[in-house]
Image (cartoon, rainbow, N blue to C red):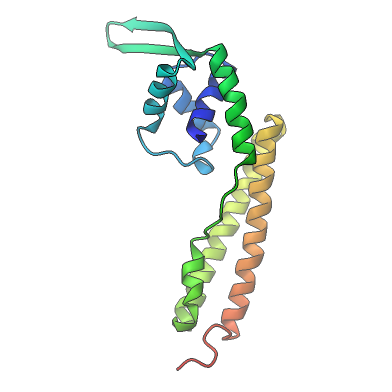
Length: 182
């Protein structure tokens, strides 16, 4: 559903070739928050075309390159976009943090390895936080309000993650995870 929303949304902004869609997604760092399998973009474009939600606007022919098909959104596509937007705004999901599995068994781990892993994770999270701050300063002020909201949320989540990791590190240093283990 998300990739179709992205394609329709980008075509709402203007006609594009699938490669252009991919480039805009990359420029906007969408791979950070949209799961997309390789090749799924072209497959989704084909599905949208078959459902008449998009149409071929133009085929650009160049003797030195393959033909380039430019797509535009149809009136039915605009309606579908609105419905997909609504569904996506209402979608719920369960958050599975990659560390949860490890935390379930942390009491069995080696204290020094746990501390080392948490220190590395904290360093990485601090770098992420700095990167998010740089990106927001550079692009955030000029970005559409929705994109600003994404950046603000990512920044706040990263701050919460850092605080949580620092608390875990403190507990690890105090031996609370391996307390009572032999």
